[in-house]
Image (tube, rainbow, N blue to C red; front, side):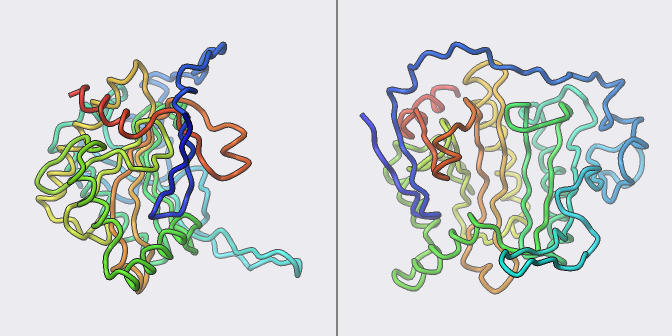
Amino acid sequence: MSQLRKNSITGEWVVFAENRHHKPYHFRHRHEVTETGSEDCPFCPGHEDQTPPETDRLPSQGPWQVRVFPNKYPAMTAEKTAEKTDGFYESLPGWGAHRVLVDTPVHTQGPEQFSLEHWQEVFTVLARQQLELEQKARYVQIFKNNGPMAGASVPHSHWQMLSSPVILPRQERTLEHLQSAKKEQGVCLYCAMGAHEAKLGDRMVAENDSFWAFVPYAARFAFEIWVLPKRHVPTFPALTTQERWDLAKITKELLLRVKALRPGMDYNLCLEDSPVGPERKLFHWHLEILPRMGALAGFEYATASFLNPVLPETAAAVLREKA
């Protein structure tokens, strides 16, 4: 049986077809990425000369635990070039910043192995970097690609931070829905969603004093998880010290559950923040955990919609059992 569900935040439609969960797959998942050792890794201690000069680090002196530097192959460039147009299409210079945050000096250490204290350090530097990048941007996206199926090109654990001179399409649609809900119903859609999920419980995965973690009603990916602050927090740097500690606890717990789904599970972490500007107070910051059970295919590319073989209620029940 198939079902279409609408994401009330973004307006995206997701097709759920659980029968596809059992379809045969006659190809091997190819992880034919060269697994460099620490002796060849540009992100390992002692190889700092293989990256652009660092812009931030913890601690400030001595051996580093967290290190930030510009991406060697940036998607956005610091040079503000002239706008080009042919009179028909719209374009803008790709002006912004693209930075890398290496979150551990240990080549083989995954985020699920970090101590809570180290998670706190990582979040502290990410928040500091976001505040800096926002000074010359309309939107800042922070994300982690963990593993080749999630888009990582270097096996050493790291994050990326990308600033944009425009609000990007998904955030723009989200903002429109948030503005409409605030005007018509007087509510924050995220706050209402979190309370609704907590009340029902069938899609909840974990909870602590500061956060709810649940599989969203219209999850795009199998076992997708949203980590939502219980307090209305428009932006990541606005989290309190206690909230960052609670975020560290629930993130580590959830990543251990995700990694237990199957050996070698890859995933993305996306810090979904608000655009820079007067609309900011409407937004509700949250973390999205996106396990990569399979690749996107023709339907997704053709329709800009998603096909998910696992109903959110089923996914949440499986994740709860992984405790």
